Length: 123
Image (cartoon, rainbow, N blue to C red; front, side):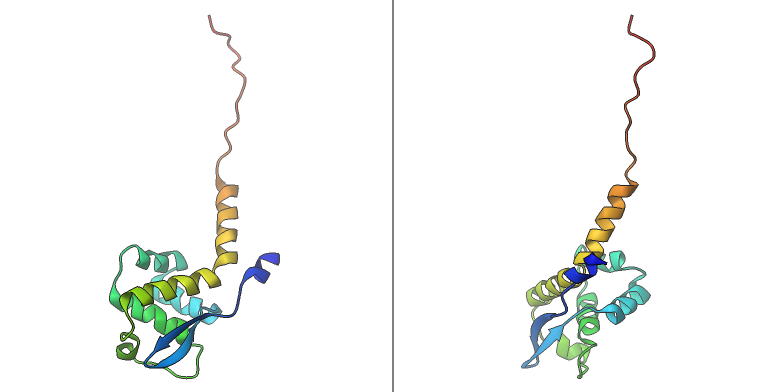
């Protein structure tokens, strides 16, 4: 439960079509991501193989909590560099507890190597 306290709820400010908006990934956003990409990990793969339509869609999902919906064309007016930067910042802000839990789980699943004494002595 203490990991949940690490999650910030501020979002990342991004200017689109002359207005500052907040890019934030909440549970609703992650539910949409899982539905569209299969998993959060699969969505993170977007950053390994950039497709502009994925960046626009992820920004759209991250803005969905706001009062105004933007079209893909309006979202597409921001620069590629800004889109990548803002998305990464917003996801890093939303995922710290999830990443820590995932790392802890991975550590727990690593097979432990136990050195057994050799019953035979070398000749």
